Amino acid sequence: MSPRAQAVGRPLAIVLGLLTIFGPISMDLYLPVLPALTTELRSATSVAQLTVTACLLGLAMGQVVAGPLSDRLGRRRPLLAGVVAYILTSALCALSPAIETLVAARFVQGLAGGVGIVIAQAAGRDVYSGGKLLRYYGRLTVIGGLAAIVGPVIGGQLASVTDWRGIFLFLSAIGVAILVASLAVFRETLPPGERVAGGLARTGRDFGRLLRDRVFVGAVLVTGFLNAALFAYLSGATYVLQGIYQLSPQGYSFAFGLNSLGYMAFGFTAGRLAERWSERRTLVAGLVLCLAGTGGLLATAALHLPLIAMILSLFTMVGGVAATTPPTISLALANYPDIAGTASSLLGLARYAFGGLAAPLVGLGGAGDATPLGLVTVASAVLAAIVYLTSIRAPKPSAAGSPQPYDTLAARPVSPPGTPRRGRPGRSASSPRRRAP
Image (tube, rainbow, N blue to C red):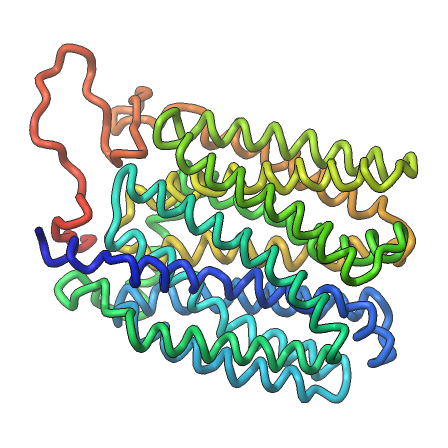
């Protein structure tokens, strides 16, 4: 067994999975008390929702910085620094005296939390390939959904014994637990000989290389638009379900948990389906679910349909977003093992920046109107479908300009029928990586 293969044990896989919870746990744990926070800090609904936007933008920018750094310095040092910063900034959120201070603290908290997210994706690309890589991304989606379930449920229960400040202290404690696990288990997955050299100029060339790839850009934009719908839901659902449908914080947490169960189930299924079926077909299935769910959400808001219609629409939309996640990550990262951190950072940038921009839009109609939520989610799903049709659906062109079949799962061109098979090119989980020119 190769040294790289030996490094992939269950403890490491668990820690890599835990790193993905920074985003959902930072967002979801305090959502049940967001209305109470709004009242205590004497803030307008749209201003309070900027605490969601600030965290999302921080998560996006943190990944853009941490991804290229991890390609140059390795994965472990940036990870540990990011977790320590997350612990400190979560405590700072708890001490915020005004909404403006909290918004600023949430942005810095997001910057720190983005490190763990991008390291989880890049380190997975270091140690897995092919079908194992798709299954890994499917597991990350499941764990993200689990965190989304646990977050509101715990947040709703904590709301009965503490206020929003106590919830941010709880986030800091979660950061401590992840730091201890990382120190004990996480060993470097990117050896010095496989790291990229160079400073900002090299990083700029790497970004340029990625942005010239039509399929990569398409996968990034699809991720961004669908997460705009998802984070519009995360930001607006607490006002819709508690304000319009009069659910208690505990009732909201259980309704949210039901949708997150769907997220987990669809994400796990998509990882398996993309491996056995096709990444593109799995992506199309997810897009269809998103379009159906967002359409139902807009109809429910416009026609004032009952709670069950709202829950089913949200369930379908969230399940569709989950189904698109493993295939879009695989399509984006399959061909870039040498700059996996940089590629992952652009995925993270799209996911959280688009989400951060969409989140405050759902509050424009006030706490008693769900129509903006329906409009934002429908527009996001439609734009994602358009990007797929124009950027990902068509075959990848060959160097000569003619269409060439392309197998993203193996990250290599498919040989024409009748061509003798040679040794499989591309990188396995244990083979050394060649530096980019």
